[in-house]
Image 1: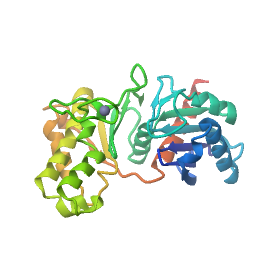
Image 2: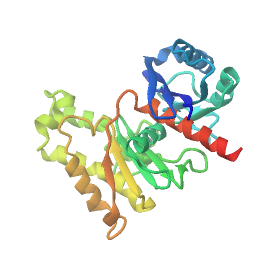
Image 3: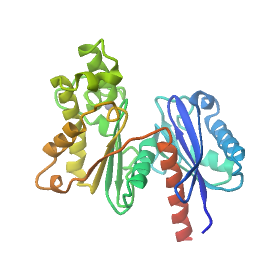
Image 4: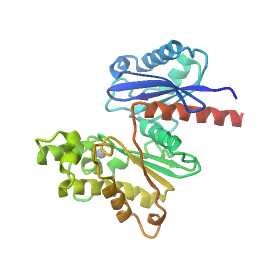
Length: 305
Ligand SMILES: [Zn+2]
């Protein structure tokens, strides 16, 4: 069988990453650049970077589709980027249409967390028939919902904002503009604030290694299970995947989080059949997930033709 190639793009607030992915699941090429080069004429600049990457790696005319993951609110039809708080130039941008016009091949745009979950499902061998939830504790609290064979988008494209569920008695202001969001206490940002207050002389990267037995840190980890179990109790998934920068920290006590999720999950189900998996991401995870997503989309199109 001849290999097919797609290009995956992972756009972040600081850096963006591009790579070519084969139908065998191999990353053929990879590059990382500063996102500031995309600030002016975002779609044109991105198209230029993609073309340059493809040509430089010798894959001109061989790429069948492109998928772009963004830290953004995207419209339900997955055509227009509505809002991207941490990145200039991408607001109210008809990115899919403009890239397709410029590149002449199908382009898919998605929330970056969905491509992380696509990466995890591929790497962990999870089938698309399963209902899967992704929980990613980084700077914020990222969430991806995969139901009935596709990413769940909601009525406006805005589903999966688990970090922004309100919690009782919390009057902290969230970066989204609301007050009381769970992300204000369950996120990397919240951990940073906690560490600064209680362990000011410890490098944040070492905080679990140096102080993992302190009740305040155990409570922080235990509380991460609250949004996770909330969504589990609503959606009753087959598999849950947990990852992100906080979970990857040295000596992060995964067993405390694992036990707390079981503690809050409804008995006997979904608790009894809970499949909780931990994942670890690297620079290429978003690129791989988007490349695989594009592969699956062109396969689907081929079947329906
Ligand atoms: Zn919020």
